[in-house]
Image (cartoon, rainbow, N blue to C red; front, side):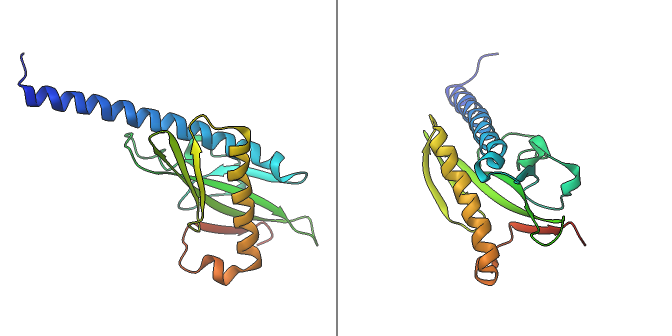
Length: 172
């Protein structure tokens, strides 16, 4: 069947959209995996980190949620939009053997050749090249650390209006 010039133009646009959305998905998932799975080493001895769903309930005893740590997991289709990633951090109690689990959400968006990253509180990490380095991954890890520290030291100011953070105490 022959197609008219407008249909052919739409086909080309569709092909471009599909290629861009798959590129966005692959690149942001790869970058996110590097951030999450290197975070425990970045934080140091005693740190525990899991990828967790960015929204809704999650259970620390379930361990790492793997691909379900991304907002794309339940969608069923790949679209061009920011991707959210949940990061669960276990902070050990200093007075007993329990721990406090905190979820921090990272938002990533690919804009041409740059990954724009924001932590749950809206603080931007800055543009990161798609040819990112270990130092770029560490910038995001440091922003996650700073976010957690800020929430714990200034909880009212930090979480007012924010809905992308969650806490679970292992002793409750």
